[in-house]
Image (cartoon, rainbow, N blue to C red):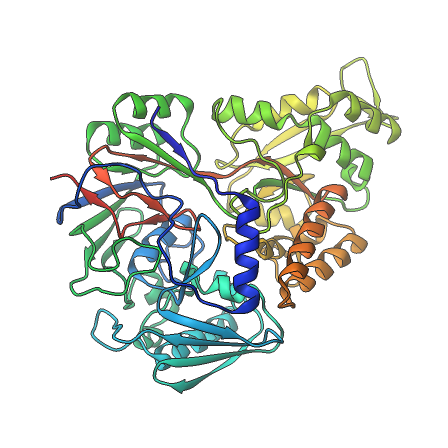
Length: 556
């Protein structure tokens, strides 16, 4: 069996990250990369072109700018073009040195001081120094102001006020409110550092790849939804402490193509047309078997952040305004059967509002157990009685729920069948991605699914806090005012403390609240798969479950 599913110990992640963030300490050490390949092919060989087949580009937002983009595939490209101040260990969650050798965090959580390593340059030869870092954060703040906070990176610099160049290798950043998540944010692709000159370009120009960075590869070309090409950068010598190879990349070139059909992407891997098949949704059982039988490898790791989850519309007059009906949903959903049926017998069963690779993860599995009899009792208590048609009714009203269904919704029919078993009629409302915002704004739904990829549980507030959420309508509809107040208090308690135990407890309380109050309805663990040719070695996932190319090489 050649499938490797990477899933670190959640408790270890929470503890390590909490301690690092609270104390503001850097730590040098071995790579410990959770996604590192265990092949024994011998010494790396330099040269060659790696071909990766991605899911199609975003038709509405073609963007490779680190601060602006949210598209997972684009963030993999960025990770290998632009370096970050820190890196995050995929196995432990610990923050490690990268462009910054060490750092300090003030006791009140409002000041971060980073000490940069010497000798780092952008690919145009200009120095990556404290002035360059200041230009990035000031530039990012300007983008937030220009877009009215709509840009994806806005969530990573909440409360950022200004920065100060202490000396060429020391930068101090000031926040108006404590931001305990910021240290982790500095390890992400969205806060990767680009040259000051890049911020003289327009937002659109940077989106199309017109910027300069300091990574092991340079961006040679970006043709949206066609081809993205990277070239090895000569002289690179400042890789992350988590990479075995901290110098020049082994590969000469990396080409990312965009393929719509999953079966075609897999076929290209099997034929040798590409070296890595990188799907958006998990491979089918059949595709995994084909890949493994060919002698290639299926790599996988859960994406950190909220699981693939439904959020309810609890507005007055909607069926899910009743807490008993929401609690009945947990018992109606058969999460184990869903994972096994849709993704395969060994696919991990979702255990809570977050995927298991998220720091501070706490399992809620006991509260999510399949119990159709218990669901029936709760629905009876709510006044919904089972009728001769197999569905529940209250007077002349049928218990009907509607959910917008797009191409990203896998297993919708199975969910529909599971709810039918307890008398709930789930209507699958076929909706395009472009139509979805209006449907949410109008409240024309009962359940809607979304996600957010970041190795920090605070990311959930960009789904559930109306003040900063990507969809204010979804956030407003998902909770009652009383529950919304509790959520905001817990998010604030976690983000505005430098006490590791307080953050840990706040996020534990948050995860309990999400299930106890029927806010988050997990469906499946979001797992990033990759089909990897047996000629590719050194494959590794980052903490965000993106592809890291520093150690990758090909047999020639």
